[in-house]
Image (cartoon, rainbow, N blue to C red; front, side, top):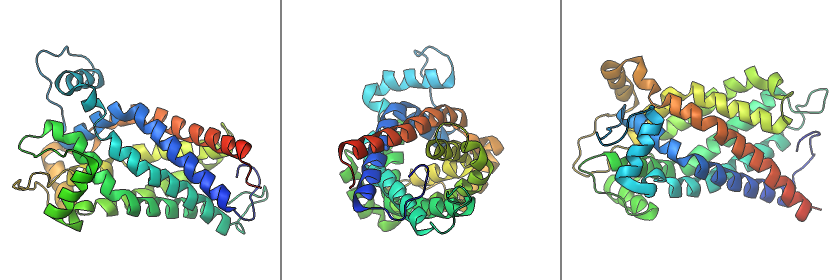
Length: 303
């Protein structure tokens, strides 16, 4: 739907958006997974233990060497399975709901027959909320799989589904929607909306409208929402060991303890790694989405 706004999305259009979004998300997640592992571990632990045998260098390079030495290739791609499994509904639901809401808001267009900033914000909010509700349990599993290699005294999960069963059995539904992690995910959508305003006009002049608009909103959202992702990661990784004493009782307690022990810097753990990960991830995701979507329309025309 680049250019003029369609009056109504056909079922095939929705299917193409879902397929292209899921495939693009999976491609991007695979490419940046090692950086995502480092980012998550830094957010949870604050710093990574590096053995003396590993040659020192930048945090990212040294961390990659340490993971490769102690856990092998598998460690560098820990959490990829639930990430991809989550991304299938995540991007499929996001792009589908986003386009559906844009269609419902088609009366809110400007002189160029394009949706206004406010309409785009509402569509993005609805899409982000829907994906957060559906995929949150898989993000909890992803966080735990990525951090169990650096945590002592935990019973490791063997697979995605065994993790989901254990969490449900040991912690109940509360574990799958770990404390306010769902709320934090939804709260992140608010940041996304505020960012869209600042980059709206810039994004209309660079790349294609759709790709640049989403790319800038995604990249900047990652920068601004780093505080809530640190809190969310720390809450999600709790509870893996049945006998473990939980460090945080909730969002407020987590924020308070991080600030007391680590200061403002504690909320920006993994920020540099995240920035390095976000740019290629956003470019790959939205470029792949456009290419796959156009390919599907060319090979299997909706009409």
